[in-house]
Amino acid sequence: MEDEADDSGIPATVLDAYKQAESRLASTNPGCNLEWELLAAIGRVESGHARGGDVKADGTTRNPILGPVLNGNGFANITDTDGGEYDGDTSHDRAVGPMQFIPSTWATWGSDGNDDGERNPNNVYDAALAAGRYLCAGGRDLSSQSDLEAAILGYNQSQSYLRTVLTWYDFYKEGGADSVPDGSGADPGDRSDGVNTPTPSPSPTESDSPGKGGKGGDDGDGGGGKDDGKGGGSPSPGPSDPPPPGGGSEDPEEPAPPPTIADLRLASPQSSTAYTGADFEERPKVRGVTSRGTGVSGKTVTFTISGQTGAVFAGGGKTASVTTNSSGYATAPVVKAGKLTGEFTIRATTGGGVSPVDFAAEVEASYGLARVGDAALKAAAGGEFGTVEAKVTYRGGPAAKAPVTAAMVTEAGEQNDKGPFFKDTEGNPVRKLNLTTEDDGTVKLPTIHAGDAAGTYLLRLTTNEGVTLTLELTVE
Image (cartoon, rainbow, N blue to C red; front, side, top):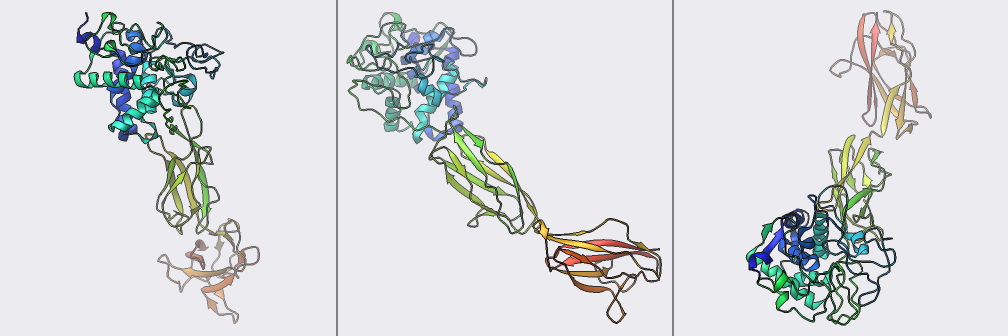
């Protein structure tokens, strides 16, 4: 007869996978309160901890773990959903891996638990994280007994399965687990991976319970979802979406938790510009998708504006929350530019450890003022400068009939009483004029007289909006 240490032994790599899944979900979904002991209980019932830890160093099983063919012969009838990609069967589905996922469910919940860039249901790290995410879905708090039981029933809608998993869960929580070398863990003789023929049992028997058991460390039900012998249930459906097939199960079907966002994807240009006081034509847009790229509806995406330009969303705030539509898309409200020019960022976030998406935005001045031509402005003392012409623009187009002031100024910006000058209608020297642009936005200054004193002087043009252009005048 085995002692308790045999039942408490969990292969080292498998135990590490359970604990890593707990740690990652504590970071990405702390409100779930998932404990590794729950994953261990399910892993024990579903596959005997990956057939007693028969895994490689990276956590991948040495041989695929497959449940019976789900062809309706004593089990549910599920026509192939993955083209045999995961279970090797192109006619019907089979539960796959240490946590026994139906292929269609893995397509939604599959995870990369060992960060190798792949989602493999036969890898215990990937499978444990996927199982944890599934159990946590729908906003469940597993510290609540009702949520805990609902999560387990969502994994397999059988009351006998629920009782067996809870028994192992309590066993691991009370006594912990001994880490044993891979390949030396308990390998139940009646488990859900289909290696042995499951024997229907309406309720946990003495051998269902952890601790001192019969020969071979039999974990009893172990089939993870037999339907009390009625012949209609799945041998080990694992999580599924829609809910696991139950056939003639006496237990009511537990709705499958909704999918969650695993990634935010860019769905609009990542940069845009607008003029001061105007609306941005482009609205930041993202799509929330599952790990398999399927859009997730009904989730909140928050857009936040940062920067000092004064830009805000329509309504006046710098933060806006948007719910994803039926295809998973969320579009920010219209962004209104402030009065200040400059660059800022709009960030889209959805929480849960999902990486944010940043959008670059820039506010440009509505009014522009530039000189037409670039020849140096020089004149001999007592002579005249050549033609000086400038152009005023408004949001990229000509600003017609726009007021412009032309003034000779000092370095301090005060009006100069020396150097170059204009002449008024009576021929008297003046150093400040009020002008107006033509229909094409240009303004041509009257003749500028150099005066008699050599030196460098400043001519400043100013629009009504405060846009300035300063030119150097050199008297030789």
